[in-house]
Length: 505
Image (cartoon, rainbow, N blue to C red):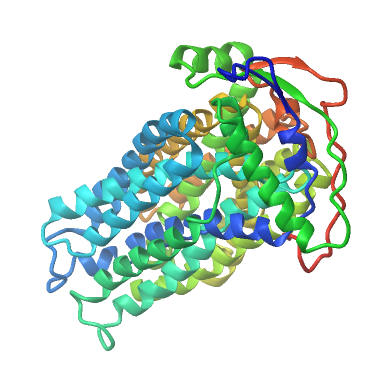
């Protein structure tokens, strides 16, 4: 590494990005996955538990004067509003003050808000801390996806990002099973079970917070913000850890980049970069997030109502069905994730979106004909969501890697907030009316709307998706601070594939 101005560190030529991208998969990378990725499990736990225990909260003796519609309507909307505002608020701070500082703060906000939800005594208290829980989770999306993409080698970035985002559904499985226990008054009193589920979320967050202490700041962020000495120390430490566990030295890194170090980037510059410099990529981000948000709301928002109204499934048994489709959701990113790094982003993103949309159209047709039972409908949903989950996870991957590093967290936050607001606020309002009527035709329409938007997003991806597989982040989108591009920087050689037993699926 060389500096043109050692006193100010204003201009730096470095091979740090190339050194990070050429690393083989190692135990150190697993610490990143565990320390950062597990928060999605908490999000899945939160969302699923609240939806499944809504009926119990509204019953006399729950300890909370609240109706079921307030839980699934007002509280859900406030959680979503909190997530959207939190993403934008924390996303800006993440780009300015660093990934590590913010992913510690946002997890602490989530932990405190979830713990205080558990002791709710009035509806206004429950609503307030549902909003603040979402506020923390929204910030996590921006901080975590930024850190993961900047720390994981280019050859593994796609599959790791997909699996981590897909782990939301592991939390959903846990939430479904926990809700079954919470609803069973033979084990827990009506005013205790639901509180313990929130308390458990806080305990899990505390464990993750302790693990996360060992995750370093992103060397890429340190480099751009004038802390190149710290960046060198972090990368050298990673290299020493990996070399101590393998025979022989690491392969050489190829490629350097020269940057002007800066501490802040204005909102105006971020907006101009995303929308003026990369309009096609911005269109892609809009399409992917809105499509997946509406598909998931079309299926999951009225999930319990559909099972109870059309198939007479008892309310306290819907958790079993949701656990099944949650497993299907997780298996999609787990089994398809590797293909996003090998077959490629454009083919996989467009195909997962289109397949899930077309399959949901088929499910709607079968449902409209009366050809499905609760079991076969759940099976259809599993197949649809197997592909949809991989596609939805790739939306987060896409917006986190196709814009310059200085705007990364804010870009994730913006597209997440937009898609979540569209699908998580307007979606429930639309689908609640459709699935709540008890009319087959209205539910078919709800499915069809989600399917159509998913297919439309798949077509956009077929034309606009960026071929980002196995490429460095600096090659996909040149940093705003970059001065020159050295020969050989464009695409560092792919690191050797690790043994199957040690690599992410």
